[in-house]
Length: 264
Image 1: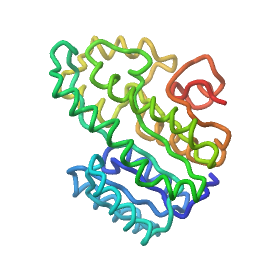
Image 2: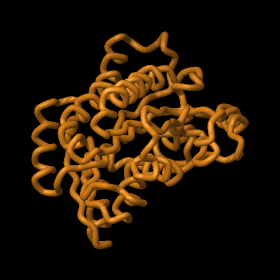
Image 3: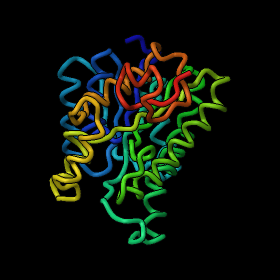
Image 4: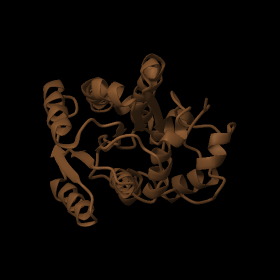
């Protein structure tokens, strides 16, 4: 995979999807800088794994909604690793399955900040470097922005804002050669979906309904998502920008699964 940067940034690098994305980028020879929210042990273990394999990696606890903290971290990262040209936003809070009627405005506002404001702040902090490197940004969102399943509105409503920002940034930053896309995972065997299954938010009936809508008749994995993300981050996707999940109507769906909508 031909990537154009000496550095990649992965937020949410201690999560199941973030870990697989980081491994994939590191395998392509990129130094990888990850952020984490609370799981320092898992983040440090990933750094140890990647460096033991001969790569360069670092992990930092960063509040992505804190503009000053993100700016300081971006400066520190650039000084150590160089300007990043791959930025993957895979961070996000655990979102319970709950009817929107039972979600308070304060709770919705908090989740919106943890999703959309965090993404905006992150991009804002790295945009000068991304323009210099003609880089690529990929946001990991959710298939719920297309299918709107019941009790998942807290996810689709907030991550839908991230997808809108992806399209807006793509329209504005294309003149600088910077691309923005998103990948929307559906049901996975690991990560947040695994936790939802474990605490009965997704019972067997709900899982059966989800499976009935998947042509391949299997749930995806973090590795599947990482492959789609890294494709979009690479020069192989150099003419794809402003795309979000997902549709079976376009060729890109047939290539990498139900993850990307309306390729250019």
